[in-house]
Length: 259
Image (cartoon, rainbow, N blue to C red; front, side, top):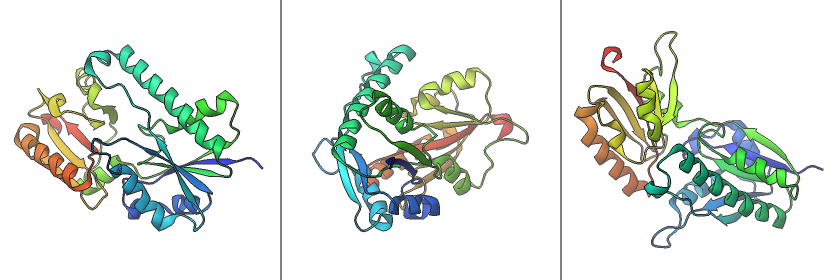
């Protein structure tokens, strides 16, 4: 029988964001591969703790967890300052992850689950990495993707907004490429993966609907003109980090004439 490799979208970190399909998938696997990041003080990775809360609620009684150390990723600005260098750094990281996950799959039998924040198709590379694993030919299996609720959906719900104008496009990008989106004239921009709020420089009159750790018990929400609420966002990010041990923010931006 072909082993199932199940990529399970679990929403934004709260048990209520897990769909029935995802809950059923979690009960149907033999073990879960959970990637752990190294923390500065050697404490438990807070994102692993959040995953374990969901697993403890939904997984089958006999399912076990296989912890895999997450390979380090190059983040130094001088070595990721161009699109080519950034792409090369990510490619190296994916290759290292593929090696680590391949070893876990070779060492463990049965159907396996990978828990994916939000939705597996949106700013997550688990599908790409596991495609690499299978392409090597040492692991056989069939990838099964279970969609999840994305932070973009939760952000819009919390702020009670529609993400785009009537008949208008929506542009989803990263903080790294926000400036490019603005230059190209996009006017409904959702931004994910922001390391620094410096990317908002020059957008002071734009309206922002911002959220961090949305869908969790420690979610933070701010909205208003960028210049008016920027310090509120800084403080909210700090609170989210202190309370959860991690911060994942997402926001919608619109220029003054649309807001």
